[in-house]
Image 1 (cartoon, rainbow, N blue to C red):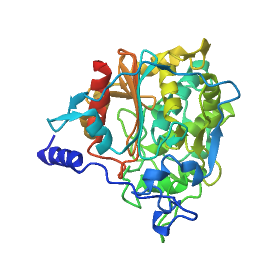
Image 2 (image 1 turned 135 degrees about the horizontal axis):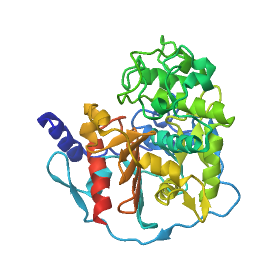
Image 3 (image 1 turned 60 degrees about the horizontal axis):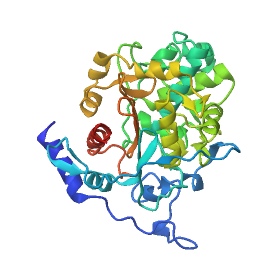
Length: 410
């Protein structure tokens, strides 16, 4: 770690989270405090938007069903004094990190019981928060289940399922390469460049508005076939949100059901408290790479389901073999070759849209500070919902250090 990075990390703790203005208050709200499609991804408007997205963007519901919600057991304990060593080399308390990293919701479970549950910034237990790229990991384990059932074949090409992808970056990539982010696509994940691949993806899925003068696809169905290949697939880790969308399209064509429908089966069996929902793109397609929204407690339920190897109340909602397959992890050398990711998560690998500590833990991560951490060795589930002002923060490295050290300590 460079001294400049360490200083930036220290500075983030010293600065802390900025106060949230009175967003969306009044009838109507003052213009400067109004949250719209045009500003909801930008601070400070994102502080309200990320747990109220259903009021801003069209969505596709993932219904919880009619059965009563399943209560979460409680084993509350004080974690106020917990501290960990920052990547900058100094000691940070749990509360310092939660405050500095713009946390909206924080939940810790141990052995199936809630140890700590806190809400900040107007977020509440009944509100659903966008999970951004944690969505990828939900899709990944559903795809693993389809592999196990024979609905998907790992070595089949994407174009065998979706003819429209022929000639695109994804057409001659295998399902396994889609799952493991091993597709050679001409794409850059740069969130503050309006011309980058990730920005063009954002316009196509309806999350962001293209600036004046910049043309954009009207839907992911237009965007994905227009992507272009850059090299040969396989043997590397190249994190691209569009790759998850191509995987989701393959899953949907193979099964005849949307990803929202696949997840709905799981959601209803979990005994969730509220419907989840996907953001819908302009043509009504679920945004499978970054668009799922759920309550804090329902995300913890999903994490607990994986911890229980897919069993919920005696019902096998996800095959244990699918979860075991993900937990095996990927090739450590391939992940380590991506220096930025390896620095952030040393010891991790990547498989099926999950960051994996082989045989030990699964990690799902979304921009602006979303986390789902499942520690099989310690029987711990941690969920963090946040509204950081930028997509990727220097604090992200410490968030991972926090959840891993906390899981080992409680």
